[in-house]
Image (cartoon, rainbow, N blue to C red; front, side, top):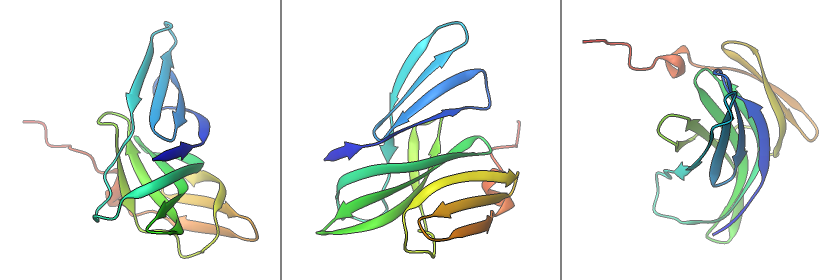
Length: 137
């Protein structure tokens, strides 16, 4: 698999993280550096042969990854939610706009602004996306 791309972002904790397409590398304020593989859990059996990272944005405790992927001879825009704890990148439905994502940011905790090459999208996120394991037994 051929992988490309890197974006800088700050997590909610006191850690600065570089997200490469296949590795997340973090450095804490104390200077501790960690590297974790990004595990893409695609839901179908078609293998992604090339992946390019285009943009990232923090969404609650996860990171939304926008990119492109090549599979079975065609290219598609992809959306994954990356869990910084488990290192899993779970696929989500692609955006309805068939253009690549150039940038994205959160306007408020449940609204995302996404910039494409010729347009912008405002996306209301499902509040259930932010519900993590809240049952403390």
